[in-house]
Image 1 (tube, rainbow, N blue to C red):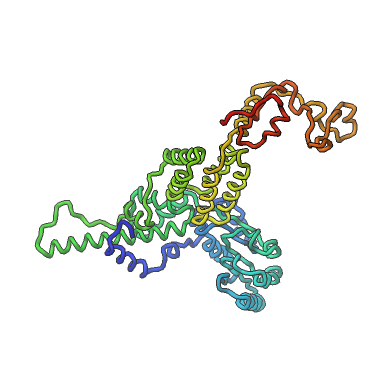
Image 2: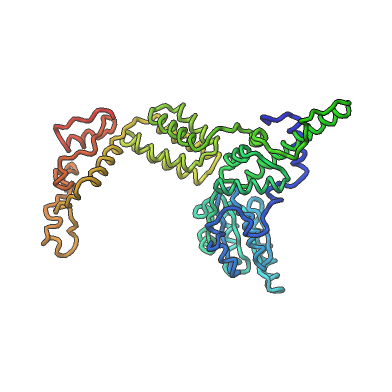
Length: 460
């Protein structure tokens, strides 16, 4: 483990083995203790309101790892008078499901008590397993609480999904992760520097469980270091040496070094200014067709805990702003990477972001569409609004022809080349040229038709 001696690491491992995970020991016992998910659990949140009136029906909790799906499921069950049963779709079988249903029917008949079935990783159930749940869910014998990290519209059968309410859990924001970590530090009877907390927050990527797991390791390392200092101090005293006046044994203090060692990653200086500087370097590297530099800045941002969705959005923008008409397929690649970020999640989504980054960096570049759009926007904001030419106006309704609407419009598909020379812009702006393609845009024939004596523009 980087930054810690073998002795510290061994002592930390022993401490971690001797107790259950911090995330389990800290699991909230009431909805008020849950960190994050205000859109569901706030005063007017839908889950909060359903529980207040004890009207909870089958639900599917959908969201990334470490956002509180299991915690919420347990709390929903606690807030209800129903019996709680938990299965994992990773190892449960159809036989297990049928047994739960049979027990639920017996419990309902004998004691009038309903059953909540919490099915973790519900997307792992195949169609037959999901179908086995349907009759019991429909009849109300069981109330299903399913949890999944995958999009239920892709992974959960339509009939089962339609009988459940979908609730999307969002990744925890930095404030929520900070609150969770400070609770964890207090729970462990330790203290931590602001730098250590910031480092752990940056590594969490919205995953509360990961944040607490890394914190627990950092606390164990800090405790091992403290014990080593205490042992050295006792040895000094046993040897008759006078302890230095500055020597003092304090409690467990988690430092940045402990946090770094716990996450086995180097802490990068990445504040507000660095955020803008590094993303600027990333985009300029793509624009400058340097895939090596672009990949470096991408790796730098992901390592520093940058939101992958932010990176995906910047790639989508660059695909049109910097590559544009020179490679129209670049936008498809960038959008595909953006969708992959939501579908796959980190760390694997880094591969998709790298794919898009290299594609954009090595693609030919043209900003002609972007420049043309900016010029058109400028004219719209500065010039009087021009009238829509009569032949372009809607002529589909009765009386339109008498107004001259649509009269004289020539349908391009009626002509051999699929093109006909006619005006499409307000007369006041007929001489304006917004789109000035470069040689890389590959629209030479279109340019010739538009203006026979207008040469293609030079490279932007």
